[in-house]
Picture (cartoon, rainbow, N blue to C red):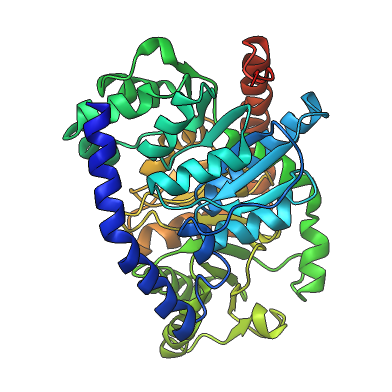
Length: 433
């Protein structure tokens, strides 16, 4: 079976490779995308570094890379003499990894597509002592290659949303076999463990260790002084401010409708609007103009003075700006995307609102609802009502701020639990030739 599978993979990859190469060449010439990564993606280049027997960590994109930050820091603390290498699957993930991890790992590189010869070439170059996959990005040839070489592999911070679970159930034997190639899977929650077990993944391989996003939230929180940020942005401390983070198409119109209503009831409220994709800035500014809402832009180094809406069209600043707001709306939740991480706001003591579609963070949602740190909303009317309640004075934030912070602190420590279990199990032992 393995031989037949390997043959079919090799044949399919050989047929696809020229077309994939052509696509990357066209994109590199037309819009510059993949210029840095295409040789790695195609298996034509391998990372350049000198350390031997590294631990290899892989994260698909931005979210997974950020989750990996506390894990890499804990590995560096517990295993100071062991070299680490880090791979990503996207250009945006590469930018975050180089910015956040380049001083803690030997190299950051792009994972090639799962062509058998590319995987073989990479494994020969890296010769890792262990492989850690963060959350997702399962590739059969890579996992088979690790298994054949006797290189232990684990998946950490694993999650499986109800939607993904339904999709995977159609390929249950394949999914079970794929996860079965790894030595262990550390899930974010009991629900994730239950869903993976229902796919046929051995319960002996599944371990609930918590969510690395709690650790990440704590790492990033001390860096921000909300009052100082308000002063730099010319936002008076008494001005009511709410922020909408990582918004998606179809959400801004609802949020702006709610903000227009708030502007008629409150004295000069400010909405900080941070779209998930900053390329949509012009479209969002047009929506603001239609409603007569004066708008400033972070990318133009403007401030919020004299503006009703401040567009945060810059990268990597959203977590800091949550600290400057009185309440936060979590984007990607009014539309069926799955939402974004509400801990980024909660860790600053900023209470949250979100729509009905926060299904990528159900356990975090349940925790924040239980602690009184957040509420669900359905439409512009709900958002207006809840924001009005929270923006009319500092009492609400004082009441809920400590509860929000405590919810994060109480559930941190996942990186330490994962690395501790792996060290105790001999996962990082140097393998013989």
